[in-house]
Image 1 (spheres, each protein chain N blue to C red):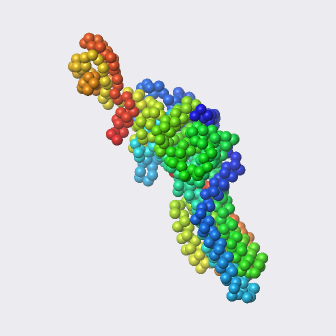
Image 2: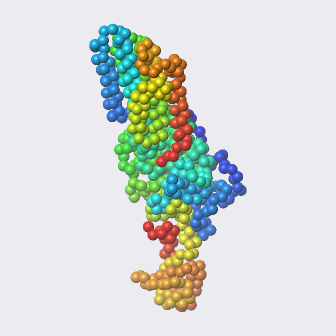
Image 3: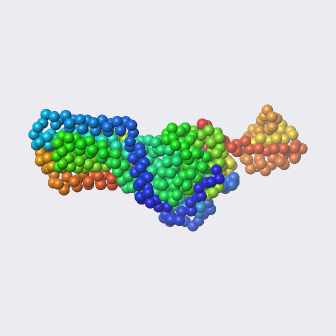
Length: 245
Length: 356
């Protein structure tokens, strides 16, 4: 008996999606959006110069958007996508079906991304629009950088959620210790940081210095995409090797 | 209960290496004869797939660090209902997880319905499982839960199959509350429906009657028997002796991670020659018969019970059964009944795993 991949993928994608949105998370997402838009609006009040507005917007997108919103929202949603099934022991109902492991990994990642992308990209993009008085190159750069970071982080955290218990705690440690402090303080560490590649897109568009961002345009796009692809592959491998309760 | 999903065809591929010439099906529920039962752990050896067997477990051990949960277990099972019996902590759930491929064995080989379920999609497609844990996709409706199982198993018409599976467990497919809002018994029946929705050839049910009321238990036991009679291999675990007796006489007894016995439990009892057997003799003069039996050294002891019947214990059941009628005739005593008192599962279990 062979299961049609599109059919299984669709069913799993819908399942992940259904279990991603809870009331608590919805509240968190609305709060994040309100804060992002609110700060962007307030920040522009004391700045008259257009160039200064762009720099301020880039700084805000880097610290709040790429440093906090993208990794934390991705962590909450990504680690839950398969991690919840493992923790509440429902994984067996998916694992013991004749479905390719990569289909499960991809459906989980795309399911988490479907919720994460609007939550991270839309408020920060609106914030950028407000903060720069509609500078479209900054708006596009903010949206692209947030999308790239969210893609890479979400795929990574889907894997982490499958690998370790209390992924949320360990993920926060990673986000704040490594990504937010260490990788922003040392060039070598920045090369091993998701954040720096997405930030490079932002820095180029704004033509500002925001930390270690001397990655090529190709690297800025390919590294986050590569991280996501490798993470999905490792998730599939891990599912194959998993001990299922 | 009559609309059971039809069993899938027999597996046709995924034969393990060095498959031997066909043997008689060990797993088909055997008649209650001594030859159908084997006592004690079986030695590991090359994987043998008897003709008609759907589950072959060969020399399987499973350890978690220093803890040996399952040790050198070998057995084969075929169509019909087989009960896996053992006390809590005996290794039943671990063995069933290994059997379904949910965790790899530390040693040994598992072959289920066409292959190794850990690596073979075809083998997994032929398995239906009711895990012991209570977790279900809480936000799904019961229909969604069963439907998902059907879709992920590649059932051609998942909605139709889901309706039939829910009908088989006597559940209304139109219940629109999330499954998490239902009682444990309802969730348990939904799990059973999800396990049978794709018409598996092997169903692995880990304590499936937990949380069911007596009426639901009877219905589910009937369902398992129907599935068994339809050619499905139903392997059902329980630590409740009364339940297991109702599943049928074909048992695998597991204790301390080892298979203590397998086959028909009455036949297992018959093979336990080192354990004294008890009989009740109904006759017109129990004291006279008791005296003769004691003189003949055919019995170890005898008592007359409150009903006036003679109860004896013997280490030589064959000689006792052969001679008792003749002894009664010689004593001019009318023999009206001879009943084995240790022929129930509880006695077998007590002897095999010790007092509970």
